[in-house]
Image 1 (tube, rainbow, N blue to C red):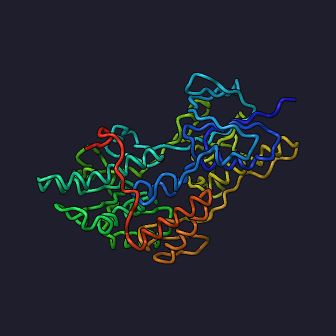
Image 2 (cartoon, rainbow, N blue to C red):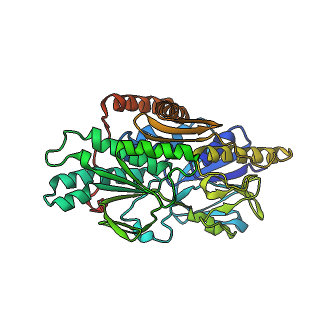
Image 3 (cartoon, one colour):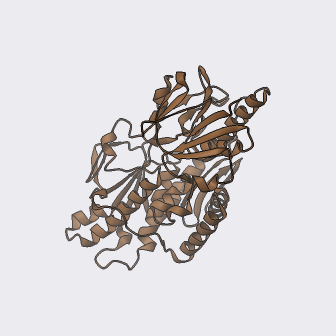
Length: 420
């Protein structure tokens, strides 16, 4: 009898957790990803702001899975799924057949119908995004140093982060610290501390997924760092010179997009109705309606909880989905009854604002300030994959804590990567 063939698309949290949970199952697994590494996305902003280097938050998939003999890793992009034929088509023109398919290809940036903003306001989803953003942030200070026109210099020293979720908050707070502390005494013609960092949020408050009290405390902590928090201000236009909001144009040569995400386009090939963000509304066992052999997990799936709210697109949710899919597959192959419907266990929300400043909402425990910051540090180090990554991150954070220095402040890339 042929070995059951499982194809898993995506080596993120959902895909990797499912793969590892099937390590003892009598199956053959093909893990396909367009990148050769697993990325710890919650710390991606640290690479973008030069606090960490790429290998600190990423690890090669082949290395992670080197001891799991029922797994093969392929570096490729899945272009589309052919559900009726149980086949996926790759970008090199080849195709792969499957008995069971798990789609966990994640999400990308969503500009709410304004994709023309993308060149002027990059988002942050991959290591490539982080390195491009780091280049633009650091080059902004270099351009300001070389600029002799006062108005143009102010524009180069004006930064706007669009989106007041955890990523936007963390980027804004870290960028303010870089300007006021890391870059002190390094320039001769500008004062980096004069840089203006704005956090622009369309809704009435930042960190809307947190309790209102913690949201207010986070805003105060940002403002103490020197960040201008602007709420109730949806962005109407973005170009190379700045952005427009509430009818007013704001000069800002560096704009970062942290306002929305859209599911991978791969979902469109399934032939099922998608939600507004392009995600797949899955059944309680995380399968696609009409296709019990196809599972969808992570940011690509919409899973409605008992309270009517969708499972949030966070790392714990993706990990839990991946582990659950593996459990369903194991039970099916063993002829056991299926497990109960997927239930998300909410472990809380964490967001760091800057040095010794964070907010934590975990099972009724609501913290802000120094204790929240220590809690955030411990949680993120604990969930990193691999001893080397944990050790490297701890060393880098310790150095940054005592010296404010960021060792990864190296500008790389091509000149045409710079929007300015």
